[in-house]
Every structure is written in C-alpha cells, then in structure tokens.
Amino acid sequence: MAESTVVHLLRHGEVHNPAGVLYGRLPGYHLSETGKLMAETVAKAVGGRDIVAIYSSPLERALETAAPLAEKLGLDIVQDERLIEAGNLLQGRPVGQGLAILRNPRNYRYFWNPLRPSWGEAYPSIVRRMKSVIDDARAAARGHEVVLVSHQLPIWTIRSAAEGRRLWHDPRRRQCALASLTTLSFDGDRLVSIGYSEPAGSLQSGPSVPGA
Image (cartoon, rainbow, N blue to C red; front, side, top):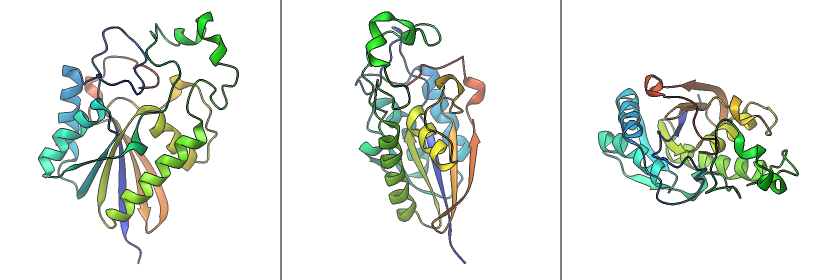
C-alpha cells in the first residue's frame, strides 16, 4: 500500500502596504498586525498535524507567515527560491481600485498577450518551478505532511494545472485568500485530492492586491 503524503500550500498573511502598490518581489514588505494574527491563527489551526517540514518563499511576508508555525512545531524554515512570487514588470506601481492598474494607458504596452502573460513570468514557468519544489518537499516528507509558504499567483497557477484547467484567468476569480491553505493529498506519487480552507478567514478585511 502506497504511503499518504500531504502538501499544504499556504499563502502569506496580510501585508502592510499603505501606498497600495503591487509589491511583487520587492523587498521590505512585511506583514501587517492583522497579517501577524493571521499567521498565528494558521499555526494554531494546523499545529497539531503531522507536519515534519516547512518551506518558504524568501520574501519577508512569507517567512513571517511561516514563523509562528515553525516555532510551534520546533522546525527550521527552509527557504526556497522556487516558492517566490511570480515575476511582474508592473511591480512598484500603484494598483488602484479593482484592476485599475490594467486600465492605466501608461501600462498598455505590457498587455499585448494576456495568455502568457506578457506583463510577467509565463504561466508554464510558474508551473514548472512550483511542481519541482512540491515534488522535492513531498519526497522529503513522504508519509507525513509538509507546509510550503508561497504567494497567490504561484499557488493558484499550480492548482489550475493540477486540476487540468487553463492557466490564463481573471485574477479576481482566484480562490486563494490571504493565509489560506490549498492542500494536495498524494497516495504514493499520485495526486488523489485537492482541498482548500481559510483558517484565518474571519480576519479577512476585503479583496487583496493581485499579484501578492
């Protein structure tokens, strides 16, 4: 009988971003007070599970989300570049309400191919790196559970690929809230189910910045 292994993809918590910019891979963006509470809430929710390893994107907001769970379980955080936010040529620009960043004429030159997308890292590239780190983490935690802390677009893209859906999409329709868990369950090497939960859902204050 094959061993069961569970991989939890945890999106980081709310970020302190008073200027409302698309921060992407920019350094210096930390969790807000609510974001810290989200991370602690997740740690309490899953801290009793059979988690044997924690991997994280190297960006501050991801590492700070991983910290309470790592402390609770007595585990080190393994930083992995493959979990980083998707590359985005628009990072650092004000987002505005809704998708106002897409309606700004100054940004039109980036939007020639939304299927790629032309403004950032190609979807297939995101799938490759996310699948690679998931496979490695799953092998290291075989028969147990592992948490990978990442970002909205990488998590949603690999989930879409795993579910056989097209990779291009409307960012407003992603099911990947702040501090949410997208859970991949494997029987041996075979993916058998995909789950989703929001342990810190009660702390959500509204739509989050796309590409965060």
